Length: 226
Ligand SMILES: NC(=O)c1ccc[n+]([C@@H]2O[C@H](COP(=O)([O-])OP(=O)(O)OC[C@H]3O[C@@H](n4cnc5c(N)ncnc54)[C@H](OP(=O)(O)O)[C@@H]3O)[C@@H](O)[C@H]2O)c1
Image 1 (cartoon, rainbow, N blue to C red):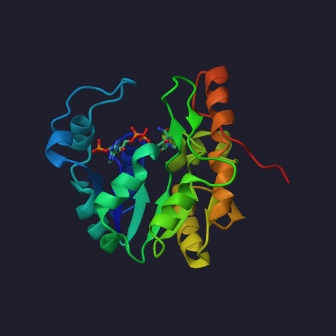
Image 2: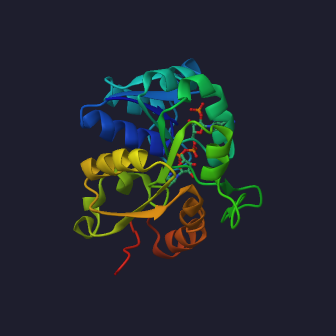
C-alpha cells in the first residue's frame, strides 16, 4: 500500500522503516526536502541525522508534505503537535480528502520548560482539532502513548503483552488501522470510542513523562488488566 508519513523525527523514521519493511511504499513528508537531507548532525538526543538514517533506508522516498499526502492512500501524522495543523495545511486539504489519517502527535507545550504541559486538554484534544480542521479526513488516534521504538515492535516489552489505544469516528478506518497495528505485532488493541476519547490518551502524557523520568527509559507501557 502507498503510505505517506508526515514527520521526519524519531516517530516518522520508526513508522516509515517498519512500514517499508512490511512491504509498503512509503514517502516521508517534510517542509523542505533539500534542507532535511542536508542535516548531517545527530539530533539533540544523539540519534543519527536524517541523512544517515535515509542512507540506511534508500527505498523510502522523501517529499514535501503535499507530495507525501498525494502519494499516500493511508497517511500518518508524526509531526510536532504544536505544528501539526500547520503541517497538515501544507499537505493540502485536497490531498488529504477522504483518507485515513493515523494521528500519533501529542499536544506538548515546552514553552515553560520540562516537563511539558498540554496546550489542549479536558474538553478538547489535538486529534479533535485536526478532525474539525479537516472534516472529511478519517482521523484515528493511536500509538501516541508509546515511545517510537515500541510503537512498531511491541514484542520488545513483556512479549508484547501490553495495550495500545484507538480513537476515531469512523469504524472502517479504525479496523484498517487495527489491522496495521496487528501487522506490527500488537494484540491488545483497545478501541476507546469516538475521536473525543483521544482526550484520554493525550492526557496520559503527563503520567508518561513522569514515568519516563522515574524509570530513565521510554521502554515501558501500560497494560489494561480486565
Ligand atoms: N518521540 C517519541 O517517542 C514520541 C512518542 C509518542 C508520541 N510522539 C509524538 O509524535 C510526534 C513526532 O515526534 P518526533 O519526536 O518524531 O518529532 P518532532 O520533533 O516532535 O516533530 C518533527 C516533525 O515536525 C515537523 N515540524 C516541526 N515544526 C513544524 C512547523 N512549524 N511546521 C510544519 N512542520 C513542523 C518537522 O518538519 P521538518 O521535517 O520540516 O523538520 C518534523 O517533520 C510529536 O507530536 C510527538 O509528541 C513522539
